[in-house]
Length: 176
Image (cartoon, rainbow, N blue to C red):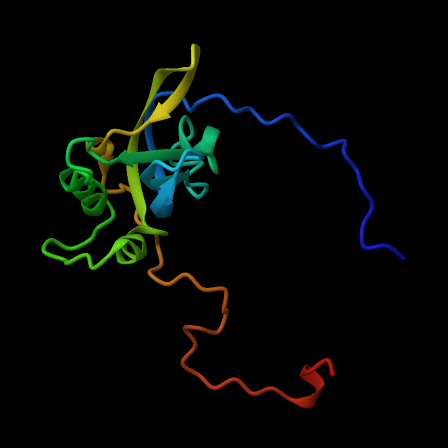
């Protein structure tokens, strides 16, 4: 008996074209330092188009849910530092309280990952080594607070997490 049988009949070619320009409700899936293959450091903020708003936003989230938009913040070449004013837009959109001290990049990540935001996604032409491609871009001021906050403040797979009652388990309930 095998675990499963291969069946490729439902496989589809993935479309890697940019998202059409517009506003999307997203979840921040990554926020932190990264580097190019050449070693140039940047701050990455990855956004995933939310899949829980297909009916509320059929023309954006409904068509493009689960797609990822990669946002990069680059260091200023003269100062070698990130423009912290640009990061304020992302922090505000994610609901980080005014006056909150950010200790380090790990703290920055913890404040943002899994938070809902609204992002205005543009399509821009990018030319690199003579090759032109279209790619998505979210300007720092393109971030805003979500219009669709998550319904629950806790994200857990534990079905008993909010139960106030004791759970009794008998020997018959245990498989061993």
